[in-house]
Length: 382
Image (cartoon, rainbow, N blue to C red; front, side):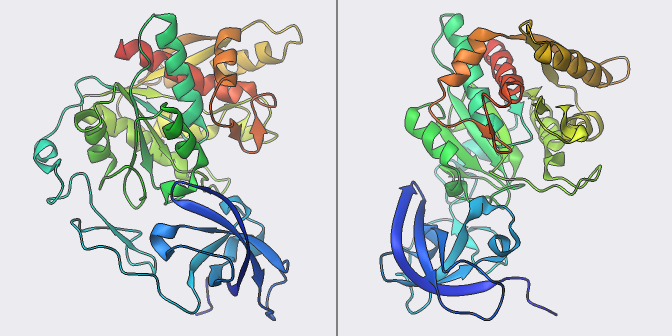
């Protein structure tokens, strides 16, 4: 069998930006007869996995995606030091293994672990007590959902809602990869990140989306939760071959636990691909075919557009989502204003808004559609 990882080694020649759980470095690569790569590459290290990284360190790198021009943020990924081992971690509780049976599997203390101080509270927990749960396809929806929720609370004269982010494992597995999560945590916009499934590195670790949601309610005391995969996503251009299918399962989980599912639509007015223009087929498939429980589906009502762009997009969106509601579908469509006030609230996000390489100015509909989901969830939270 041929190798499935493209390996390189090199020396750290520069230190870049760091944020909680992650550090950028510049690595000068050793000569290698294989795939041509630049002499120096930007690499990302997770110190909790590989230990601290300093100038002059020799590192082993995984450059597979970089060599193919694919995602992972344009990074080579640090696998470990080439000539020394990091110190052993402190002995401690916890037996949950994430990224299981891979060379970098990590042992963590789960919030629902028998050794966790929260185990008793979660052992028989079974009810979200109507907590709104916003489900989104892409990680990029997270700051827009939270901005919408805070905007709605401010308009109602209420305190900003306490938000928990439940991160699934369809995209990046380490929560540390996300500058968005780090920025929202620093700004106080997200109270806790809970990593579920094979994902790890959150403030709390959980085995499943179900225990992640219960932890959001019981441990974090959240007013609402947002469920979405980590940064990045996988898609093959086929009807079913995309990681966002899990959004439908998250709707089912929220409903099973007596939460109030809110299905955030993936919308674009700028995507050149027909299947993602207006409402993405990802949303239509996940909510129309995978979600077996009913959810509220906030539909953005755009301000009249003198140039007709958003007006036409709004009509397209409304036509596309009609199949999700009765009598053909099981969901409840909820019209929510997506006007200038919400756009201003989105512009005030403490983290950069970007989806598929487009910002708020390039594709406002994408963020407005996520924002109205947050508005509706905040209204439900009351």
